[in-house]
Length: 378
Ligand code: P1T
Image (cartoon, rainbow, N blue to C red; front, top):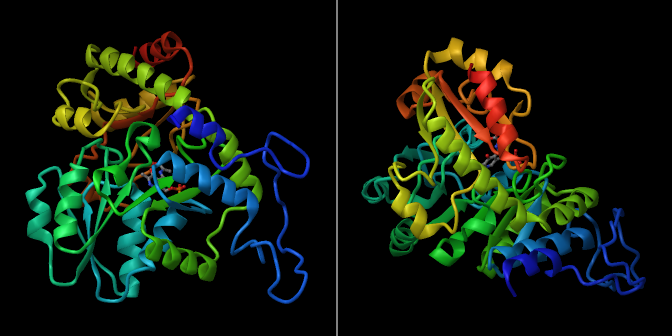
């Protein structure tokens, strides 16, 4: 089955009791048993819920995975993965990641004895050098948030395999439509389904996919123990949203390409980063490991913080808000908003400057989006 068909049908056969074409929202906490331990596979909704199962089956199909677990948030998915490690374990992470990922690793998980190294993985040789005897996993975001750096997922997975490390990829920015890390050799892929997968800015959710049965059982055990589960209505909304993922991603990308080119030619813009631009330092890698370039753009306005603030107050169609991947265009200032939990010195070293702006390009008409940016820059 092709992607578009799977998004609409995988895990979503019509309801056998009524014929309802849309999956029911099983808004229930528990399930009646005919005798102790005698049930139809569902006991309690922290452990499992039929609406959640349908979402998991659909998302597994989209990532070409055997297994999927849905979570209450992307951070919940990451927390569950982290609990699979133990005190003294070392994890190598790419240096540019979502601010909340950095916060979870450096401010929470280090309190429980995990060790982290943040390295520039755009040069894959750095990964080999960072491996220690206690290293257990490699954590990748590609493209990274917010700088849109790319990491060679296949090369990283190969090194991880040789050294018996788990390779984990946060695929939120590309969505399964444009990139499938498991097919490139990774062990685990995760998403903030809050973003492109749901696509309508009305749910916070997460998902983890893998082909490893032992691993998914371990993660499910942790999820059930910690309780990081999505409610049935959120699972249902995400299932509804994901049906149009292919159409949306195509339009996100088409619009992003045109907007990246517009920004590149604008005299008030210092720099534009978009993997689809030929001058992106890893454009060749983007073409190799992704089937498209996505809907995220970062750019630097001339004049630093005052110009950035002035510009961000003037956009109308681009709403000033954290998050990304919805049908509507969003714009934000990473240093003050999504990446504020990263120390100023670390941000400066990475290049998350005061003039840096991140835009999530929506699926509105591109002419209207360009007009909005034009007037805000004037
Ligand atoms: O917000 P939540 O669903 O918990 O997902 C966390 C997360 C994980 N991974 C990536 C790559 C992310 O971008 C996020 C959340 N990011 C934002 C809210 C943001 O505006 O960048």
